Length: 193
Picture 1 (cartoon, helix red, strand yellow):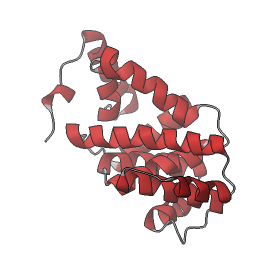
Picture 2 (cartoon, helix red, strand yellow):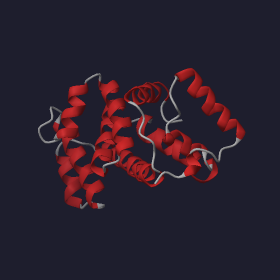
Picture 3 (spheres, helix red, strand yellow):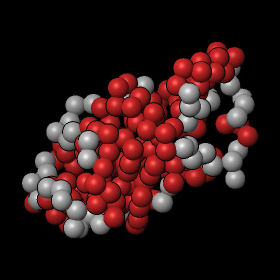
Picture 4 (cartoon, helix red, strand yellow):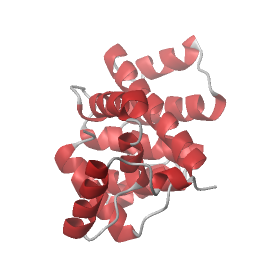
């Protein structure tokens, strides 16, 4: 059920910004972006900082890797909006649509390095089951992933498990493929601020 608050309930300045974005981009503002403007003191301001740091902050994982993690977590969660948004962004970041499609179809046979595969496997388990054990983390570490990379990947997982749940709870509108491609270009250029 789509909540009407995503269609209205913004300050005049935010409404003007949304109109300008639509005018210049030719695409509506995605609901994920609108949500951070609704009650920014409660959710939006903190979410933008956390997600930007997880996705664009310093990390041994590339931006493309982290976008792929976001897409994979969204796929496990089955969030249509987040799958489409982060698949488009990962495709553009890697400049390799078939690679992204292969990972989302079957992480075990996808042509990715074992450290990334092990990490995606861990994130998928955490998303599907809601918990991890010490053995799950040891398996990722033994695949050559550093402790810091595990922390960085878990931050991506938290960000997109939260976002996917909000997308489903608020009934985020699924954009056109062109809208998601435009959003991906924006995310790759400006990040999540």
